[in-house]
Picture 1: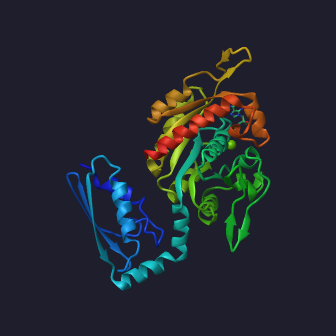
Picture 2: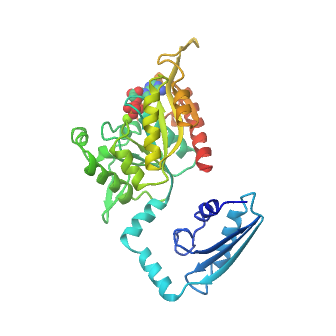
Picture 3: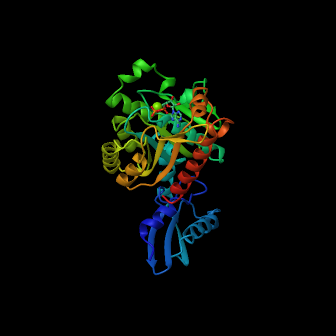
Length: 353
Ligand SMILES: Nc1ncnc2c1ncn2[C@@H]1O[C@H](COP(=O)(O)OP(=O)(O)O)[C@@H](O)[C@H]1O
Ligand SMILES: [Mg+2]
C-alpha cells in the first residue's frame, strides 16, 4: 500500500491554478484516506464557483495514478468559509510569503561541495550548469565561495546584476542566471566574512534575487564544511549536495565530515564526481597522476553513487580560463562528453528524489 508521505510529496506538485501555490503548501488537503489501492481526498477550495475545479481534480488524479500502487482516486471538494479564504489570500500577498514563493519557484537546489580547494569544484559547477542549460533546463548558479569566487570568470560574464524596485536581476550567460559574491565585494573583503555576515549575504542572494522559475539552482560552496553550508541548509531544506573530489585516497576523512554535515542539516547527498581522474597522452597512454580510487571510496563512504570521472584535459583548463564551458566548445571533447553524461545522471537522480 502506498504511504501517506508519498502522496503528500506528489500533491506538492499540484498547483492551485489561481493562487499559484501547491495544494499542500496552501493547506487545502482536508482529509486523506488510503484503503488498498484507493486514495480518497477531501480538498477545500477558496471560492464555491471554482472554474478550475476540474483542472485540479484532473491534476491530482493524473499525478497519483503515476504510482503503480494507486488504481483509484476519489476527490471530494468542499468550500472554505469566506473569512478563511480572505485571510489566506491576504497572507499570500505579504512580503515574507513573497520571498518564500520566490524560493518555491526553484525546483531543485544542488550545492556543490568539496573537502578542499583546487579539486575543480567550480569547474564542475559551471560546466554542469551549462550542460543542464543546453538540455533545455532553466538554470541558475549562485557562487557562494567567499574564499575564491571564480564563476564569473568560468562563465565569462562581465555584467553585474541590475536592481529594479529593490530587486536584484541576475545577469545571464549561456542561458544561465548568475549571481556571485564576487559581484559585490573584492576578494580581500570577502575572506573576512564569517558567521552572521555571511549568513545574511547568502540569505539575501537566495531570497532577494529574481531567479524566476528555475529547474536547477547550483551553488558553488566554499571548500570544506563551514558556515555557508549550514546557512544554505537552513534556508533551503531539501537541497541536495554533489561532492567533488580527486582520486587521492585521502578523501575519506573529508567524506565523513561532509556526510555528517549533510545528516545534521538535512541536506541530501546526491552523488560524487571524481575530477582529474587521469590524463591521456596524445598517443593514448593513460597516466593516473593523482592516484586512483578516491571517488569510489568516497562514494562508498557516503553511500552515494559515483556519477563520473573527469580526465585532466588541457583544453578544459584553457577554455575555463576564457569563460567557455565544455559543452559549448569545440575543444575539450573528453570533458564535453563527461559533463553531458553528468548532466543526465543528475537529471535522473533528481527525478527520483
Ligand atoms: N579536469 C580538468 N582538467 C584540466 N584542468 C582542470 C580540470 N579541473 C579543474 N581544472 C583546473 O584546475 C584549476 C582549479 O579548478 P577549480 O574549479 O577552480 O577548483 P576549486 O573550485 O575546487 O578550487 C583551474 O585552473 C581549472 O581550470
Ligand atoms: Mg572554486
